[in-house]
Length: 181
Picture: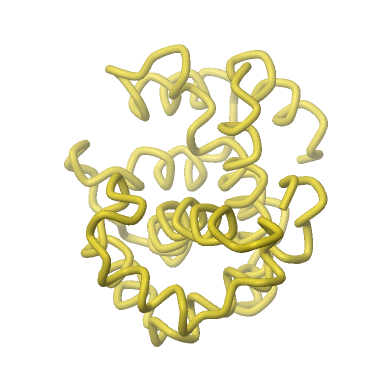
């Protein structure tokens, strides 16, 4: 699998640049976790890149519509399953480490972007894991992010929450210029 076709698919279905940046952030975190766990970095990265590709076009059917399209396009079954399983409301159980990693990083990347945007220079470099934990307690901050999902994601992945925050933050800092942060 190369990255060109999945990136083209993402851009075909997603016009909102913030959603594209979210996909890039999740991809970076997934690649980092693949390296950490000794897994297939391309598979994990592309799973992160494509997990929400259908959201803008089919918000009411996301991620099931996207997963079906990915299946029809011949994407690996484990990628398709992870896409289906990353949203609790689908009822698809997270079975693999790939599934659990995608769930764990998805919401956290959005929360970290929000944390960066309230910094003086609006950069990820200014974000500290300890400040992220404090912001998690403030229910008015990034209220669309489910705090229980952040905690549960790290637990399902078997990683300490503070460590998880720092790990995902570092992965995102590695592509900060692509994220505009």
